[in-house]
Length: 302
Image 1: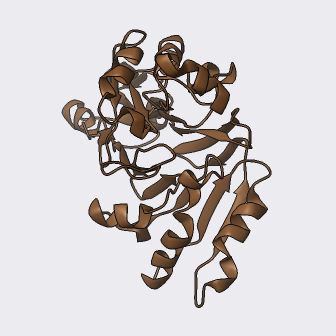
Image 2: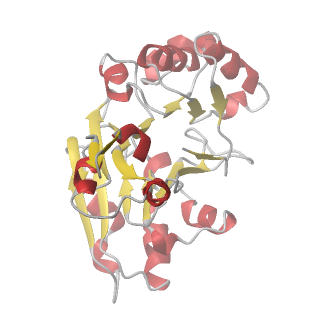
């Protein structure tokens, strides 16, 4: 049986509003086959690519959750790096409703001599789809237009060619039925589809960064394999979290439990917790067992 391609998530920055010695501003890279999708682009992201020994010229899209500086101030520098590095793709930047003009003005596309094409597009709902995966956005609550995002890898029936060889089943019209999950009959013998095929895909990565708790979140991230969540505050600072429209680590755990996700990753870590990360960890752990706190350059494969 062939191994399914992996989705990889690499944290290039995990800090909140103010970076620390160990944490850069928010930026997360998702890779799948030839797709390299950046979620947010905090200041210094271009350098984080270099430190992680990643090539920014492989980028295919950027998803912006909202226009606060700790999520966008790296855009001009990254675009400049791409320009001087010979980037030759058509870069798409997706953003919340009402922010396109702000982002276009901010990155000042006109200054790029001999540059590449950039398209900024406001999105909500399912906004990109191909044969293998789709991207979708849901609006959040952060005082300004804000999106959460899902990367959803579609499930597919794959034929196990080693089994075909074993049973001497030739390639041909019968395989169409197998791909549809139907049993087949060959030379008078019935073969069950479940014995000749395997399921590839059916995976979901959810990104819920700066937002207050709201009723949309659980439905949007339901059954995610990996939920990446804003953990700007512990439950001890729940009053400040509500005031600044952020989630607490405890709320993250409750969301993960209610949505039946597989794994919860806490990010957007404030410097106030530099020496007491366990406070965030224990808050989330009380509600949901499979939780980790991301560090810069942490990576996860799904």
